[in-house]
Amino acid sequence: MNHRYTNPYVIGTLLGLVMLFSFYTMGRGVGSSATFARVATAGIDLVAPEHAKTNAYFSKYLSGGRSPLMAWLVFLSLGAGLGGLFSAFIANRVKGEVARGPSIGVSARLWLAMGGGILSGFAARLARGCTSGQALTGASELAFGSWIFMFSIFAGAYATAYFFRKEWL
Amino acid sequence: MGPLYKLGWFDFAYGLQMAGLIGFLFGFVLERAGFGNVRKLTAIFYLRDFAVLKVMFTAIVVCMLGLLYFSVFGWIDLGLVYLLPTYIWPQIVGGLILGVGFIMGGYCPTTSIVATVSGKLDGLIFIVGMIIGSFIFAEIFPLLEGFYSAGDMGAVRLSDVLSLNSGIIALLVCLMAVGTYWFVEKVENKFGDRDTLPGGSKRMKASAAAILILLGLILAIVNPDRIAANRPSPQIQTQKKTEEIQKPTTKTEKPSSSKFEIVEDEGC
Image 1 (tube, rainbow over the protein chains, first blue to last red):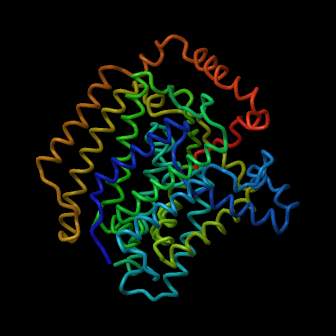
Image 2: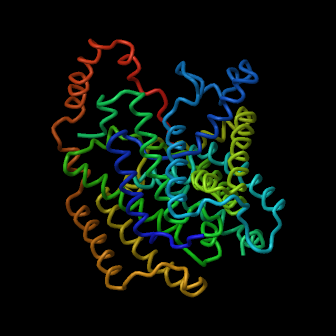
Image 3: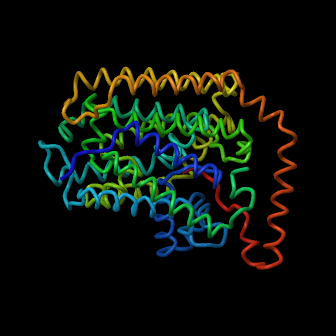
């Protein structure tokens, strides 16, 4: 395992330039959480197309006449997966495991990952974005709500970090 | 002049390819930072390693300065860049819940993708959870509809709310970033493991901070809002440009040009 990570200020600068490139070329920033909403929509559309069409929220992803997966953020997430894989691969960091702190079991960690995922998926829809699509993108455009959202994320996590310390420390 | 896509430089299909490229770079830099490692991500909430905050703030500052300078030089029309609307109450509550989800699950949406491709099963489970969470949201959406649009302020910027020009806001953001870096480095040196924390010379950090503040100061003096407003009717110019570029494609291939309209334009 290679633990030499790149300096966070260097990464931040590069990430800022990637976002600037995205704004300049496409007129929008990065993001990812809607990908998962679109996957959910595509799944429901496959199993119960009528239900998906009548649902007020799913139907918004079904408009436009193409598959809900033919979307900017879905491709961005696919790219992020490839880019992450490439970076992990050349640093020899690809390893099948359940990442967790030393004092928590595998099944407890997986249940908490599931719970955290459900909360995050729900919250990202409620706030119209996640850490990247709402906080990073919006904040660099100086959008008011995005700054409030970003501070709310840190507030929520710091307020409850104590209760999850056994999972990580 | 950008943004290129909104001015008709490429069509939807090409935009998806751009998304793949931008995503690749995005995922690559996140993994380089160590954001596929869940304990590195959560260390911020135990005051041991503030890499998450440093990366986020630096990316925001760099991109903000880039956008404002591009606007000053006339390289981008910020009016055409999609600005996320503010719905203050769902954003506060959504942020708080997302924060709890972050510390409980260990990831945020994009970092869970990076973790999953690095072989972390918990990252994959987190993704499954997010799909379920989105499904639950959509199913109970009729109950949430009122709250979802609560506190609608429109697409407002900090400069509108604080009634200061964007240049002064940029300077304040730069000052806040430098102050935050200084503070969190003190904290992590106290609580964190110094062997794994990034190094970097004091002189280099001081010069970087000085450059950042200088760039903010120039913007505060130049006032990018005034320059953008004084530019001779950019709207008409851009429309003309779109027409010029669109016309030839309309003639050559009809089906692809009818796809030009931007179908979905949300942030995340």
